[in-house]
Structures are given as structure tokens and as C-alpha cells.
Length: 151
Ligand code: RB5
Image (cartoon, rainbow, N blue to C red; front, top):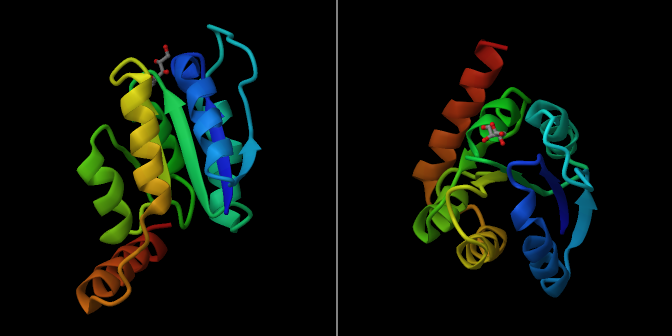
């Protein structure tokens, strides 16, 4: 599984533990920065390559960190085929993939701690979109149609 990863300075404190977990999970990490803390960096610059990788299919999923997760998710959702969401609880990390085919998870390092973030990432990556239930496909198709209609 190819995982695009990005963080601005607001999310940087979680980076090492998440990369460690991704290594444990044996996924291919596409680390798109930042690589050092720069308090003047801007989250859209970090989000762009990650969202682009997911949008184009080069990455299967994406993980974005910022202070709150909000700026990252707003930016990521500007890209076609990206379904990004802020997620700070275990239930949504899994259900967001199973029901909504969420393909980028956004976490705020000022909101949750390392332990919780790592567990959330694990749940996000092990979840799969539920193809057995017709209603989830129907909803996803409606969402895709909205994306096409207003692009
Ligand atoms: C950076 O200070 C902070 O504003 C940013 O990381 C993020 O929280 C935006 O949503």
C-alpha cells in the first residue's frame, strides 16, 4: 500500500511516531515533508503533493497532519477524487473508510496525543470500503456526481 504523508509545523510533533507505526505496518511511505520544523510553513504547500498523489492514484491513501486537521482537510478536498476528513476518534477512523471511502485522514497534533493518533492511523489503514452494501456504493456515486457537476 502506498501512503502519501505530509505535515506542517503544527502537526510535526506527531510525525516520528506515525512514521514508526507506518514502518511497522510495512506500507510504502511517500514522505512529502515537512522534514524539519519551520514555524512559517503554510499547510496548503504541504497538502498539495499529498492530495495530488491520492487524486492521481499514485498513493492509495494519504495522511495529513496540521495543528487542528482542519486546514489540511479543507485544502485536500479541493482535489478531485479526494475524500479527506479530520478524524480524532477510533470509530470515525474506521467507519469513514467503510461507509464513505475516506482516502485521506487529517489529524491535529494540538488536539490528540501520539498514542491516540497512532491507533487512529492503524484503524484507518486496516479499514476497507464496504462493497457488499449497495447503499454505500449508491451514496459514493452520488458524491462523485456532485463532484463532477460542480467542478
Ligand atoms: C499552524 O499554526 C496551524 O494554523 C495549522 O497547522 C492548522 O491547524 C490549520 O488548520
